[in-house]
Length: 489
Image 1: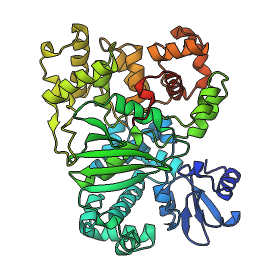
Image 2 (image 1 turned 120 degrees about the horizontal axis):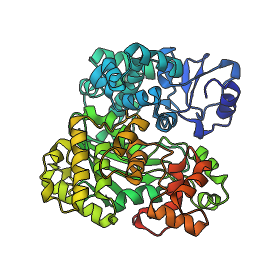
Image 3 (image 1 turned 135 degrees about the vertical axis):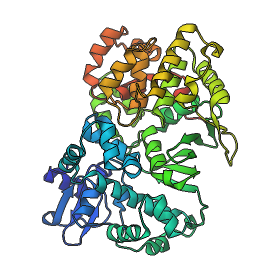
Image 4 (image 1 turned 60 degrees about the vertical axis):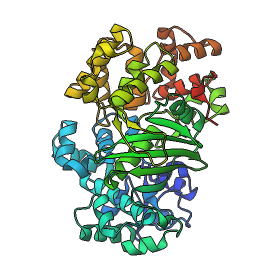
């Protein structure tokens, strides 16, 4: 979008928050870059430069605006609605792969050369993978400076910097303040946080309807791993350097996030995975406008706009749970999953009580005696085949997954039909166009709304909803009184 100068100027002049994260405005006369909704008086168009990423702004020598804090913008929705090389690379960078494995590790995961990845990222984002990761480290550093009492040396290494000197230089360059200056500007009440515990505000593009989003997560919560308590969805997180516990609560204008981490180096990854689970980088206006064009869906969209697709923080975990949920009720699926967690999950300490385990890794489940599983033989075969494939690396589910290739691999497994593959594509892989024409709830809603109820006819009718059919599913599900559609009390 940053190449459409006239459209960008209109967005800046109207201070339209919908475009935050789509592009950034660099002002040549001040050397500052802002989000489109910056409350400051807009500069003259001749003094504006529009860039596709914060990293590109920083590389061009611009520093972040202290007023609108552009580094806290929602992410671009492009990276969650595409499955090409650039989108997969951006999802991996957000998951901290460059910090942990370097650019060669990123290239190895994607199956391309480092030169090809750098060329494509530069062409589309104006910055290479190192610059994009550096911008992310700067954002993490600012967050730790302003919300904890950690020493600057501890923050430097927790944010992923190789040295305190690099940390100091980067913070000064990006924010035009020394780290101590950033901390002095932080609210006093926030600075009293304890090491390992953080309180964050996760931004999103309005509108956001929390009912089906948190209702789905709460209604399907696995005891010991997830719970709904005091208006917050809480769950354990398995992270690269340790584990964590997150509590997420919907608030006007943001999602309140409380994170307790065993290792602060996991902050960036934990935040990224929570944003992905709640689909916070979506563009609800674009989605709803497309679906509202259908006269059958228009009343549903107008009644409760801004529905998101509830996703996951762990793709392999969700695939296992999808198999456990085949042809059984939500309560039965939770019971099966809870038994696996109790028997094979890794115990964790929850300061608030209630959460007890991490969901078992595929390697742990691959060694389970299938005869001990209380489910039909055919489903036991499906589950054991899946976890073996995940443990061996034959099946890869993650931010770097190639959607068509992964679908084909899943369909080749015994017991994986279209419903299971599509629900994994929707909620684990994040495909915004995944569709469930055989789902009982979707077919029931279709009949009530006068839509075709047979899978083939409904799929043909749903062609007009592309590329947002996964969101159409959320609106169809919402016609039922199932607990997944209700925000818990």
